[in-house]
Amino acid sequence: MFLLFLGSHFTMTAQTNDEYEYTVKKKKASARKKNKAAVVKAITQLKNGGAVIYIVKDRKMKTDAMKEKGFEEKALQLETDRMRKQKIIVKGLKENFKFCPVYFILQSDLEKIQRGEIAGNLLDTTLKKDATIVFNHSYFLFLDYGDVYDEQGKVYSDTAKSDLTGRTSLKTDCFVFKNKYMSQLTKPFPYYITCHYPAKELGLKMRVLNKRLSAFYAKVAE
Image (cartoon, rainbow, N blue to C red; front, side, top):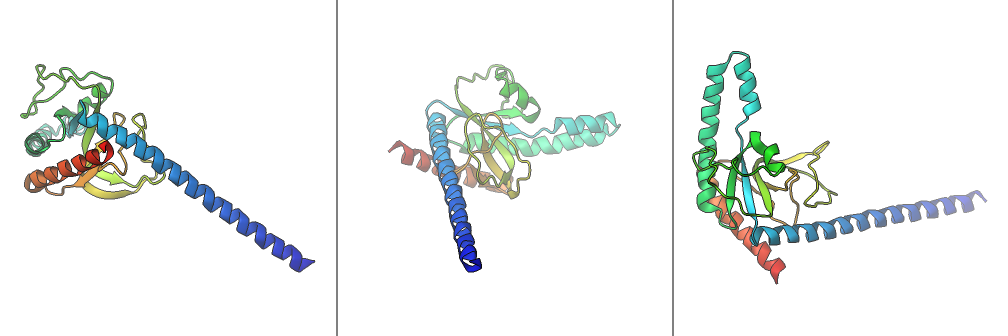
């Protein structure tokens, strides 16, 4: 009787494990299918009337806090150094990113852009706001410079919000495509490219990114 019970127990455990693995595989397959549909729509909209908005890291909150503590000279130097580096990136993007139009905003204006307050907040290549720049695009993706995170199991959509709680950084120094709510895109979209030294590598990296985006668009447009 004991052996019969033991055999039945092992059989039930094996069935439970098999069912669990099947459920996990099914969920992953469903997520991949949904993600593919979402990013196919994203690349199509981006190419057909869409635009990219690069986020210029001005770190205004940090420098404002430094000024309030009396470190104004150090804060101004930090701002100058940071914006000098950002000008190099902006110039490089303007000259080399060709997949769709590219625009520029300050990180401190991000919430305004998310609310749709784009007019008057776009930057020229000197990083000055220029009210004459017209933004006639119904769809856009942000391009951010920073880390790429492990988001296995994530179901991406245009309305997905960024939640990096418990997420692990996989790569640093990357240009990363993100939606309006700062949620990074996912495969099979070529959603990031590593660029450790923008001053030296940006032209080459953007040409590679152009090719990847164009190849993905051509594939989904077949």
